[in-house]
Length: 449
Image (tube, rainbow, N blue to C red; front, side, top):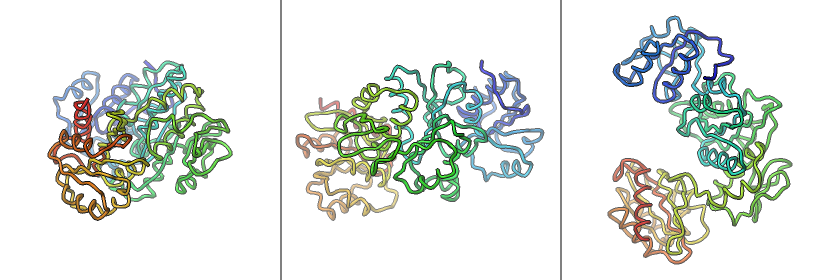
């Protein structure tokens, strides 16, 4: 068991269980801390509650009484719990520090960490970075917001393994001393304002990723994003920009033919499987992080010529009957569908539609110019049909289910065309999750084979 370092607190409140809270409580108990756990939604007979009680924790469920703060020196908060709750207001009044589980992971790790954040592209960049390192004969593990609890991964790392962390603004807001050796800041758009209240607060939370870095660390950032370019100005770390628009003095960039790092051509664009300019940004960021960690061009080439994307996020399903088929079921809003449609220059047959949230789809019109056929599913069929007619889409079909939609998409498409599921809508009118919708799409495509 690895010991917590630089953690001078004995009385700890773990606020919120789930995976990260339970892991944090176990770690603290194993390090001899007095742990009190408070979870409003947990039941007193939950397995995790029984486990923590058996290890010596005091567990309070069902509500958040202010008395749970009595005697506490620090709070380890579940990232999803907002800071404007009465309990946390009282904690601030009492000057009790509030951190998230990621801070504990930083105190555990004995190896250099790569931390990746941004409004979009975190998961793709995290997975690309880790896969490139592995393909370069280096050991790497992913953790954080990607589904693997950071403290659990940090405890099991050996000294030769690197930890690649996907970090959300919720996690980063609760760090005090945490710092990755390599920080990656991809982009910043308005998001999670219900939690952060203002865009400035959200941006500042993202910037915590480099706040504690020193001259010995690296900050990889998107030089094409003016908000980020300004935000990184005070960083003490070595700044490594990436750009799709210009060649920086150091860092990574792309021209019409290839991708480069530090004046060295790394890979031809035509060899990259992953589609879309937004994914080129993710790729450039991953190249920077991996190269700074010792990756080889051979490892980069091996991954980028085979990596088909994160499941349901512009995922390349395959070349089927000479059509390029992509699953972008994660596109549950117009912005995501716009990015997907912008990724292709060849003709597209689009499958779209889903839950009707009351909005129209006028903002999608400019992105339908390259769409030769549209197959509509779900509650929004009529709305999307109006939009498509106004945009001049040549062929529009209605489908009752995904099998029908895929069959019609193949009938409308020709050789070398793209067949794209990018619904621009949530899935809940027909499917439990966007993952289920994407899986049904992939299954329907495979049925055709």
